Image (cartoon, rainbow, N blue to C red; front, side):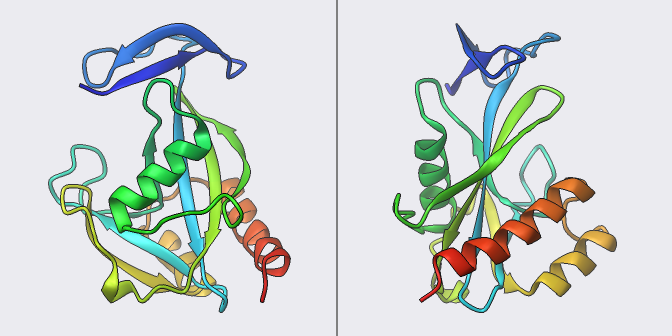
Length: 173
């Protein structure tokens, strides 16, 4: 049974929790979700296709991520999701929070980390991830346009692509 902390419209934890799948957020209630973008030295993005058995967005290419569990910090949720889904350990030195976006019933914290791992060597969590691969910014943009990758919105992707360039520069070799 997965529990989420309920947040108010300002992102503050209210002290209430929700059981995933058994509680529907009321207006003004939110929970924390994390997205983790893995960027290579070449500026490529590691993307994943969701398992065909997923209730939400089955078989769709999307960002790595998920909901934070009750009591978990945003960084710990990002680290856990990346390790669970792809087998990548995100160190605090290389994991950087880009920002937070407010959605209908969640706050989405967006994280970046650097890796050059071979996609074929990843340990995929089969209940969550069907496959993973590296793509260029150009390919990702085309996938979004063709609806082959989940469209989080123009502003979201503009921020992702801009931040990826800055992040690579900041953490370059």
